[in-house]
Length: 408
Image 1 (cartoon, helix red, strand yellow):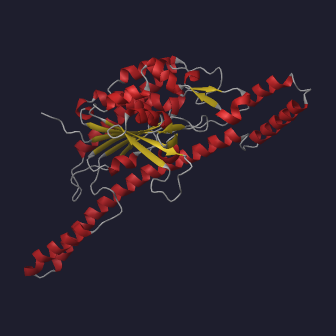
Image 2 (cartoon, rainbow, N blue to C red; image 1 turned 30 degrees about the horizontal axis):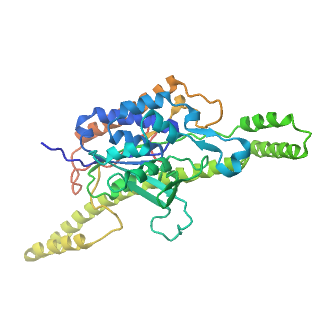
Image 3 (cartoon, one colour; image 1 turned 60 degrees about the vertical axis):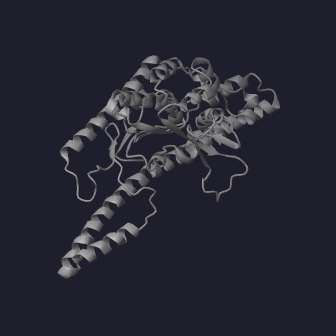
């Protein structure tokens, strides 16, 4: 008997901490055969796009092996000082690392065309021809069903290119960079798909560290030996001014400002994405209740021989009403909120950084446990609640956040 694929999985961005948590989350979903065999779509941004490729191909074991071996310099390697104004702060090494350890990106996505799960990734378009009035609002989405493999592979890499660190990636005519700028948590795309009947999502909640003086001090030590050279002496003075700004809580330098802007943008659009879904479901529930109440009131006050006609007119009026919601049904939705907790890896990509294996394993286990807790709570809720009138028996969104409820 063929199983209907009507479940969508949504994966947010989140860097190295996020993708490890998402790996544990996906391993838990794959362990639930009833759920996993019904997954028809994966929507991912940045780290979620990378995890989504391997999940859609059912190669999570290979992804785990890759991540356990991955070193910081194999993702984003710091550039030399003289390169910074021209090539970005870091060199984007991840595409080469993936090609060497797993397979070239276009080969990976070639297999997606035959996979039963469709992957959709989000990319920020920073091309010159993009206008503010464009409907896509600087966002491009790429589907494994409709995008040629060579472009789909570049789209995945562009979605994962942290634009505060590296230059954009060309995806056909699109100049693409980190999808987190426009849609870090693509929950809305799952809602907009009329074939989706259930959603299971992971939203990474980053703990952004306060900038430190380490990089400034390291650069200063390298320059001190050349203090007698006037331009170097002037640069040291600028470093002193940057350190003073940092101590006041201000951005120490332009890269620090870019990281702060990215934090604001990602946090904001992620929260709005989830709020839109929650409010849409709440509106659909209220609409169903209102429809039932109006029909009951109309029937109660109509003359006996007009009750049938009154009920028909009420139904016709509600059927003809169109709200600005892309879907007209309630979706059972589980959103797992997860942060790295005490097992966080250093989210920077500074030279000499190390990512311990035991910390990686702890993050994978944490993602698995968060998913397990959320799915168990959803199952218990479904068993303990009777279907409400007018809601087709659909439970509302369930949010699990490892002990903290709510968005943000």
